Amino acid sequence: MLQRKLYRFQCEQRPIWVFLRDQQRWIEEALVVELEGDLVTLRYDAEDDDELHSWEECVRLDSIGAVSTRLAYFSRSAQPDDIEVTGDCPESEQLPSQG
Image 1: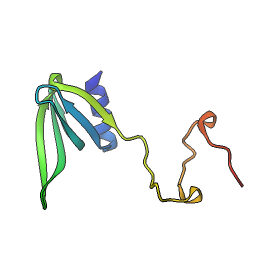
Image 2: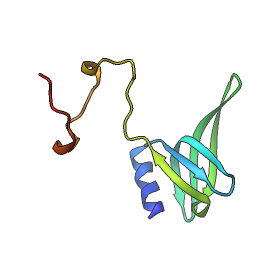
Image 3: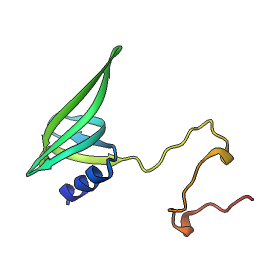
């Protein structure tokens, strides 16, 4: 099941947050670049002081404790009329239009 989810995120090129149980750390905004057997190759950037590092890391499926992905984001300073929305949202979850 986890492998299918990761494959879907790979196809969509969607960034994910991965918790590694054995190392007790999060990898933030990683892209799944390859799935082969029980190995997952993740590519991500990390900032250290004033330097930005790009990493590619192979982890085993059984060391992954959790995977999160961002559903949506918006600016807190944006005015309500500035927020872009899509019609993909189910009608029951849409906010009533103010127009």
